[in-house]
Image (cartoon, rainbow, N blue to C red):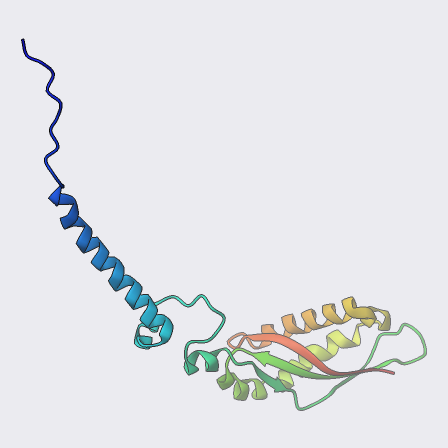
Amino acid sequence: MTGFNPPVAKGPQKGRNKSFWPIALMFIVIIATLLALFLGRLSFLEEFLPSTSGVLANKQEAQINTVVTHSMRETLEVVLNSGGDNRVYLRLKLSLKLGRAQDVPFLKNLEPAIRDALIPYLQELRPNELQGSRGIFLLREEMLFRINKITSSVRVEDVYITEMQLQ
């Protein structure tokens, strides 16, 4: 009759210790690399890593993200459609926000066309349509739409009203 023979412990397992050291070494290398990046020692690797912070990594990105504005030389002056005998004058001075600085000379050449596109629109406005922040917002949006139709190859990002008078 054979009895039950329990398994005999064979001592420490050497296979586990051999697989532990490569993993530990890789972990140490990763921690050291991240620490070096954090301290700025491996700054040449930053161009390969995705940037998640709001801080710009280099000067080229800072130049790309600068705001370029162009102030129109002439002031737009029109008589609004008041519907009565009294005349209401509107005087506007505009600045245009551009995406690139090299687009400014092109936009300067198109200023007469921009002016010719905006004046008929402004002449049909009624004084009550320009009252309040909603009226100014709609005015800016419509002018931006009309300007971008003219400057199809150059994108104007925003229209700033730098001066506005109703008389």
